[in-house]
Image 1 (cartoon, rainbow, N blue to C red):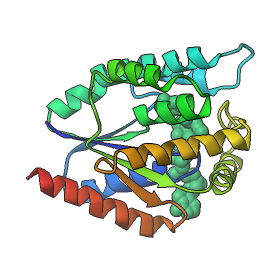
Image 2: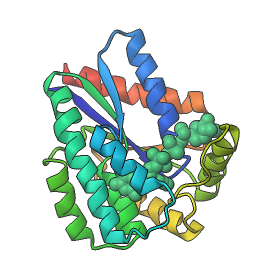
Image 3: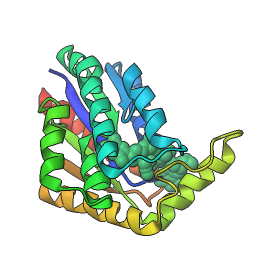
Length: 215
Ligand code: Z5A
């Protein structure tokens, strides 16, 4: 069995930047891995991603949102993550079920017990071996995300989540921090306000420790 490592945090926390840098680090050491993301990661997941993230002319209530993220995850786990892990690969995943607890649970205030049950089913009871939480103040994260959008030519404007009120993102951040507190053996909380290279070094030292620990 391979290793399953997930990258989490609020919008603009730097997790996508870091996941790519870990990929390059593993490339340089000829260690085999895949990078994948949620929502997305499979053909069905990409279609669901389009529905979930684009601002559209129709409503998506919190419950529908939960089921759509979960449907994407079930397919992603069966089609991509499990086969890779069974093949002994390292799977680096940009968001996984902790995002559902933080966004749909803490952010949208849906019932946590229900979300945990749905999470267990959609993930096929799979749990990450290690989860990085890149923690930053909401104001910094949103500023970074908006800066990135404005630099991409013809990029779509802010998506459904980016256009949420600042209070929503604050609840999500708190949700992530309390999750990390409740599972300190799985979570590595990283100060995402540090510069990119410093964060990268911290992340890599944890990844190496995990790989070495596997033997
Ligand atoms: N969602 C959900 O509600 N429920 C679920 O179950 C799941 C997801 C799975 C996915 O959006 C949305 O789905 C997400 C939660 C919800 N919405 N929100 N908010 P996405 O995949 O399109 O985007 P994202 O996951 O939010 O992240 P992102 O936009 O890819 O950003 P990021 O990964 O956090 O950051 P980044 O792209 O690496 O960096 C952002 C910018 O900051 C960029 O210009 C970097 O160069 C810069 N950066 C990065 N690190 C640093 C440091 N250390 N210093 C300074 N600048 C930095």
